[in-house]
Image (cartoon, rainbow, N blue to C red):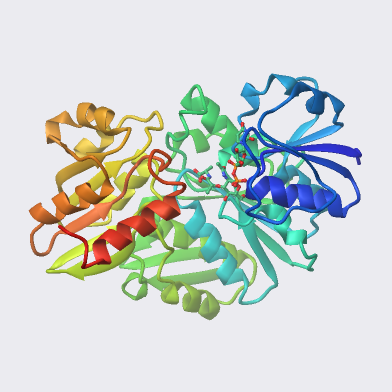
Length: 427
Ligand code: UMA
């Protein structure tokens, strides 16, 4: 392996990568365009270069590992260099069976649930875009039988030889159009998950998406479709002679789109010999993840839901579709390049309230629905409360990223919950 390594980006991924490589005894430089904060402990042998990407350090390195947030097209020093991401590096060292899950929406829920199901029988690592960098699997080293990885398009851009024993694409709708010039460029990054697939491996794809339908696939393909998953109030999962029927009345997650995530996680469980009872046990006890259509509380007959993780219009559409009741929808944050017009299709949206940098575009795209603009999230919630009636839903599903006013979607979701639950705030 190359000896002089440059790690670009000093967030979670970069610091984990630098520490992992330093433990191997390599000469590691960690570089960030900003000042490097000591949020995570950095190995004492890692050399730090911050406040800019300088040509010299790129030229001197034999291998460059970039973090997912680094747009490689913007770094001119990268040309003619070996550039990989942490997922490729993971594959050079990992010996477990890998389940890789990508898609625009639902990948975190599916990854988490798949991990929980497999843990019924095996020693499992769960990581990737879900929040724990894949290389954390080696710090400290443990023997895992399976690694379940959530992979983003950014992470898939920088793989070379990586392959998964089970590769899943849940769906592909426009996202990250602030990084990709075209939707097709984003689709191609997602499809990279299949590029090294071998005949003995599995590929699980959603037939509802045309770009996933006519692919030449090396591997055993299993297709699913939203409309064929559900019959007689049950999610039916079949694999060879195994058959699992999940009663939707026993599932705690609200929202039809979750059925696809549950289907895929259960299918992965069945294929890998987890028993039907063990799968049922996990699925029926799963209450969902924080910030993903999370029920906050009911106040004066009005129910509040926190869906701060939604940074795309398609994800907000999925959230709105989950309710038959009237919804007052709060949108806003940083515009990611996708039109909001799809939201005009929903009759159960009673009113739209918007705030933040994207508000101007929301007002223009959705003008038929006369959205109301507020200065910030707090004012948006107060306004939503003032017009909501008993039995209605206040849904915070922003369809934008959070960075105009918050450091992350988590901070934004926690702030929303605080506004909703804090009785002392002046309305
Ligand atoms: N930086 C540079 N140069 C650049 C760009 C960024 O130096 O050109 C620096 C920043 O100053 C910062 C660091 O890079 O210090 C941030 O790196 P990063 O953006 O790659 O973030 P990490 O903290 O390493 O988190 C990443 C993922 N972030 C992104 O893809 C933007 C996390 O996904 C993921 O959980 C984590 O790795 C572990 O794998 C977050 C995300 O928003 C949740 N993902 C997108 C999404 O889900 O839509 C793809």
